[in-house]
Length: 310
Image (cartoon, helix red, strand yellow):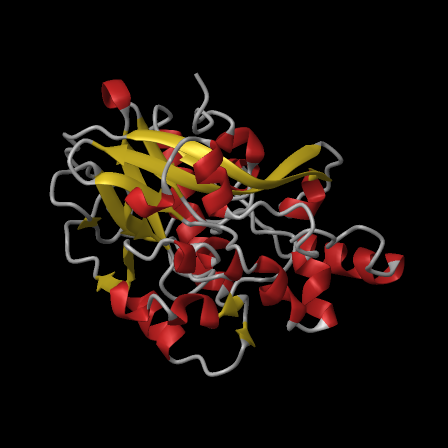
């Protein structure tokens, strides 16, 4: 995402992109017949964040809204400390091979991704926070894009969990780069992946759920559209505080509050993404006590403690 609007898109092309996207940013409706019930979460985990990259943007770059207000954009890794499971990592952003990963992508993709410069590998951030990467037992993926899976290879003792639709999607890919996915980042971990379905009850406007560890601490919910099997993770923290990590359904919390799509038409299925955004918008209105954390909104991520901080 770095560099997307840093003088590398012609002004005329940028204006056309913005006008086209803004024209399609009508209010996203809540799908009819959506669930409304809640789910009991009992066991508490301790969440914290490791930042891999941060940049200051304008709001219009992250959400389809004509605003020059700031968007503090980030790429980060979430850590959950579970009382019995141990250390869980959610979306390990960059791997130690990030420079090699990006060396083979076409120039147009580097406009989106930027270079490896300034990108901290997830394991380096973990070590700096006093977390031994070898202690990580579980990796949870919201989806399979390059900036959410890069560190999977560097956590060789961890079981990797992703939704069954996302697992099938990645398994169907054949090229080095296909929409946002660098398949080789998952190749070494493929035998460690345990896909899950959403066989559990509909909760909080989501059509199904999956109790990841069977104790209510982390509940996966479907958020398809950005990719076929995108998922969110509803987490119970200390004192019953709840968080939902929503991946890239939106890049900003503003996209859920408004609600509106991203400025750039980067979702595989825009209509289905709109349904997911609608469900998150309803959650925001009905359960304001649940902190919603889009993966690339630094302001939302800043509500979490930084891993290793006092």
